[in-house]
Image (cartoon, rainbow, N blue to C red; front, side):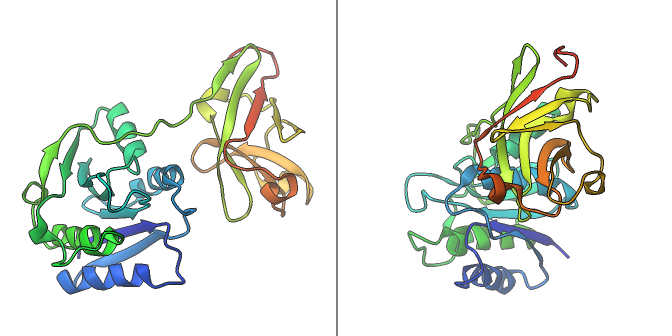
Length: 267
């Protein structure tokens, strides 16, 4: 059975996600639908792009990923679909998929991009404010039903790109920033294990606080203490043990984080 994942900034209060699922099942009753998240901060394309980059690789090839974080709905921005390494992506051409594209291209994997401009694969009536229901959900369902991607639109080569901020080298380490904050208040940064190259005796500075060294598990520090470790995506994360670091220290995406290596050498 075909698998369709959905990621949005809709939340769950208003039924928008349920409507999209209904549209999909009317066209492709056999589809299995997986919710990645519907709690992307409203209109925050970058947070949606990061979530897609972190999650879609764990789905089997052939999965169709529908994503809707679309502040430009109804404007000139294109509806699009793409094929990347056996996965399909359907949503707005506003940078939402660009981190997935860039990561694949860095691995030498080609990407195919199509403007979804064939109305026969949309709903008969298209709202100017709900393309998730009227264009993206039906397009995904038709893909899941076996319609080839090339029949559903016109190829193009220049999707909108977002740049993922890279940490800057300093004489004694790295200067990076906060990328995301999870439901526990844990802080994910753009400094990765490859930057530290195994140096666990580093010093981390964030929000006026200093952390000495990296831990392996949350049990390595007392409850309530601010600590740092390498997270599940090989990124440097900062957390309060059994607490909420973002709330305690008023940390938000974009805040700076500095890592100083123990020796002062650049990794």
